[in-house]
Amino acid sequence: MSRATRRPPARGVEWEFEKVTFSREYPRSVVTKLLVERAEHGGWELDRVRIGPDGTRRVILRRKIIRQLRPSFYL
Image 1 (cartoon, rainbow, N blue to C red):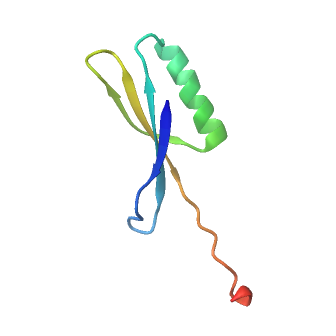
Image 2: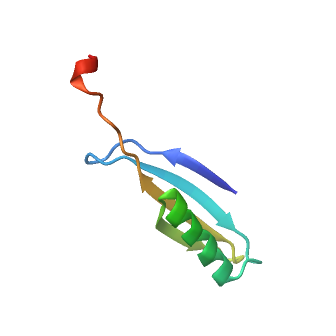
């Protein structure tokens, strides 16, 4: 149902993307609830939504990848 990918850093920010597809059988309210659940518990935000001619919704979610710097006393 979904796949997470990473893109190279751009302007100091690195994003992780996840593609999610919902079939036309899911009502809009159900899709909204599922996306809100991912946003609240996974830290995802909505990047793009495409609705195909057959009614499928292709959603791309994104979240920042936060890199923790290694302290200098470990080097």
